[in-house]
Amino acid sequence: MDAIVRDLSGWIPVLLDVWRRARRLPEGPRDRLLPHELREVTQAVRKISAGLTGGRSLAGTRYMDDPRLLGAYLLYYWPNSYAQARHVLRFVMAASRASSVLDLGSGPGPVAFAALDAGVDHASAADRSSDALDLARTLAVERGEPLSLLNWNAANQPVPEGKFSLITVSHLVNELWLGQSDAVSRRAGLIERACAHLEPGGRLLVIEPALRETSRAALEMRDRLLDKGIVPVWPCLFREKCPALLKESDWCHSEIAWEPPRLMADIAKGAGLHKEALKMTAIAFMRASEAPARTDDSCIFRIVSEPLASKGRQRFMGCGARGRIGLSLQTKHITESNRRFGRLRRGDLIRVEGFEEKGDGLALLPESRVDFVP
Image (cartoon, rainbow, N blue to C red; front, side, top):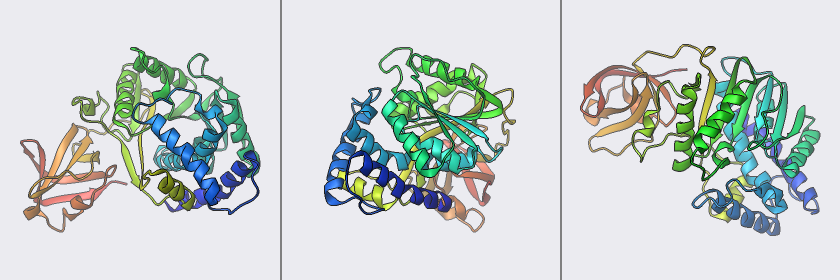
């Protein structure tokens, strides 16, 4: 996370300066809010947080047209979305460098700017909020970034013309067609249409909140896309129907430990929120005809759970060529070759050699070997 933290730290003074100018406030500290500024922002952040979780009263509304909410988004949710995207793009862009990105539902551009900082040559940001796009334009001018702006409404306009090596859709699809019985199908249709604008070998990245409801909806959309010849290439190793949907209580998301910038930490504390980790449901897609071959190695697993409480053994859920399956190691069987198992975290990609079928999954043995896969 070092490069991500460094680059995000460079954005914080810019975000604060742009916010203060928009609010017609005098200059202030470059890394934090003054007490009266903090009170205003935390109040708005609490409103956004309450409106996008629980009853989700703000989901799908034009809340970014409210200057105070847009400002709060800029100082708190913008850095969070930027960090999420930078983390995921390290994996999504590892196979091939992206030269151009289209950021659909961009808001004031955190994901577009994250892509530019990750090495993309040019970005286009598309959103229905003129105010959010104006803010993105101001940020681009401040940083001298090559950003194009497109006024675009996902619900009733075609995907912007052009071909792109990367298309990003962050925290958007869960807010589309809310309450409609065909919402998942229509969201899958939007992603399918967007994929038609990918250059050969291009990827489309969806990032959604890690809430159970939004995560399961994203996984349902993933399964609809399989039927349309669009497959997940990260973080999924399994290219059939998602096994996390078999139980109503399950869902799947990524979680990355991080230390947020002081600005975010102050706002989170004031708003009563917790941001010790970046949590999201993120899936990168490609056209099946262009995707790398899927792994059939039954020894490779993506860890898709936190450590699971189990008496006398360490246990995780893994997902791989066999689907979602329990992995366990009895405490008495811990050795130097398998000791890494107890230090695993959600999202780790591992290779396990030497295990046996057990009633509820796979059991590691004293001679088992656990290695991280690059």
